[in-house]
Length: 202
Ligand code: GRF
Image 1: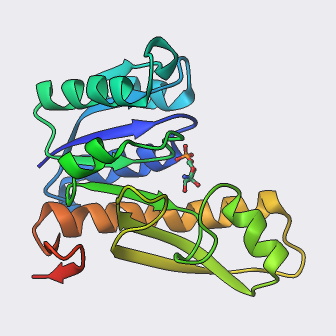
Image 2 (image 1 turned 45 degrees about the horizontal axis):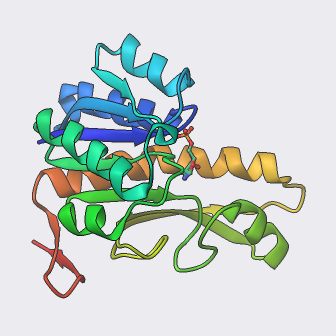
């Protein structure tokens, strides 16, 4: 399956997806054909370049509104023949139209065990709540933020000495395992989204 990855920053999750898709022993059934960043000059774009993957900057600032920006995104993905879209630290909310167009083919990684700690600073939210485990979630994207059927979750312990930074790093390590695992499940047809928006294991 042809995959497009949307990023906004350092792209360590993109790197994990690149490594997994380019490793023929992992049989991901997926190839990244396009990386799009809404922010110029981010490290993630250099990762794409180093891996020989086409990349593009689409700055949301160049568009009048969210819908126009999302239409431009959709156009680039369609031209590249993308079949699955991965949100890997993409810090823009996508419009209802975009989510519906790509429903069942659009997945996101979130740094908490959903449905807990939605939105930004999920790791800080976990620390403030005093929970002793957290983790990450890869899920199908629905128009509501961090909603949608869950494909893979990985837990991580929260240590008493953790800071926000140390927890961010530990959860990222879990994301780098969970995201390729979820992409493989989707690309190889082991999982799909039913018309009732519930997960369907094949
Ligand atoms: C990840 O923690 C992801 O869950 C969140 O943004 C971060 C992106 O990190 N949505 P990176 O750009 O993949 O390093």
